[in-house]
Amino acid sequence: MKEAIHETQASKRMSAAWVISCAVVWAVMSLSWTPGGAPVLTSVSCSATEDFHYVMSEELLKEIEAKAHIAILDARDPDDYHKAHIKGAMEVVSPKQIQESLPKDKMIVVYCDCGEEESAKFLALTLIRAGYPPSNIRVLKGGWYKWLDLGYPVEKN
Image (cartoon, rainbow, N blue to C red; front, side, top):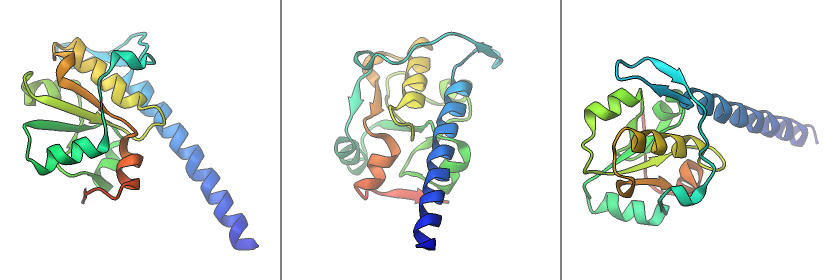
């Protein structure tokens, strides 16, 4: 009985931490960036799902296995990225870093660990605003947790 209580309490703490983590990531990602790299707070709505193209985990796995010309961006907390990430994914340090390292003609898949892909959607919107064609940007449906549930490959540091 005591173990079940501890497991329930731990589960609640993990759920609360997850919600707080998504809120913090959303708040940080709600900053626009000037060309010099300075943050500027803006009002952004990313809730309209029809604004984004999605890719399913199964499709992304096929692209990875086929060594397709794609970039995968991890929009999660840096600590989470360093623990494990989708094989081949890049850590997002700043929008400027992305703009300097990714060509605009490359297919880009963005994922996060938020319930409705909030951080991934915001990063996708940031890329589109930076001039990346919307047709080249995909949000991973179900994100990190769906990828893990399916048992797909991850890289651990």
